Length: 80
Image (cartoon, rainbow, N blue to C red; front, side):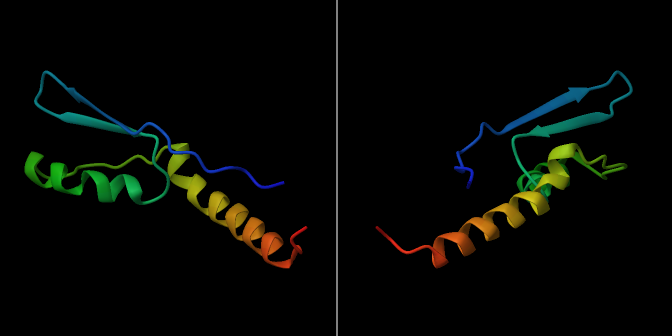
């Protein structure tokens, strides 16, 4: 059974700490899409000191594998 891909809500949250550090959290994106979305914002904020990937960052590989399996199954299944 193949999963339907649905658009998800994409959220960027910023926390500005009292010492001036800015923490950024991105939700709703998978893999490197998060970095592509935020690279221009980060360039204007300053030097990125640390990145801590969330579980969503690692889900891209699993989703790509599932999609490939679904496409393979669809291409070999005759239409009714």
